[in-house]
Image 1 (cartoon, rainbow, N blue to C red):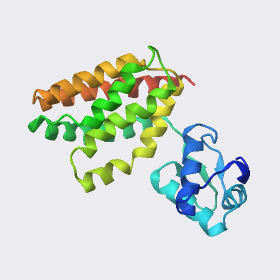
Image 2: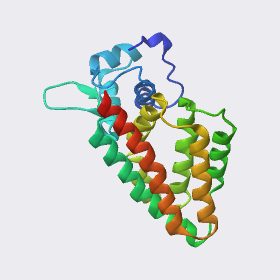
Image 3: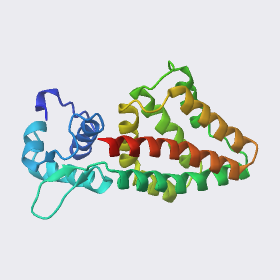
Amino acid sequence: MTTASDATLGIVGVVDAVTAQLRGRILRAEIRSGDPITEAAVSQSFGVARPSAKAAIEQLVASGLLVRTAHRSARVVGIDSATVRDVYRTRTRLESAALRDLAVTRTVPRAAVEANAELLAMPPGPDPATVAPDLRFHTALIEALDSERTARMYRSVLDEVRLCMAQVQGRRLLDAAAIAAQHSDILAAVASGDGERAAILLDAHLSSAEERLVEALDAD
């Protein structure tokens, strides 16, 4: 961990700010899978009280980025094949249902179109920078339903989704242009009112990332 001098907490609540800083470091692999995260270290690193450090750690445990076992410090969750498959299949269930609903009214979320435009504008080839617009595309499908409960369910796995996506693109497994093309096909199916085709395309899109990451993890 770095020292408090390079941690800018801003004006948001202390616990939320520390949580955001830790989340970012985990997703950027500055803190790696298996690394311990102790209350004492967080307190010292960010210059916050131990209760605030503990609360930030608990938030990341709840979101799935950290895991804590009895009598041991919290640690960054390890990404294995079983985790990847469960995360991606959970995503597929939620997003497929969203696409079928959106296709009924032929609603193409503007935020999804804008996120995909960012991907289309990127240079060809794998790039970790695709993670942010890729995730905004998929999140936009859920948010377009205007259902707080569905959005809450999706947010509950979002950190694990980010971690998996960072692993996929950090290993340079997927091409930005290919991602954007698949997204475009999904949106075209929604626009035509064919929810079933949109769901099938989504399944193929997510399964491709899932299988490539599983193969890479199994080869390590």
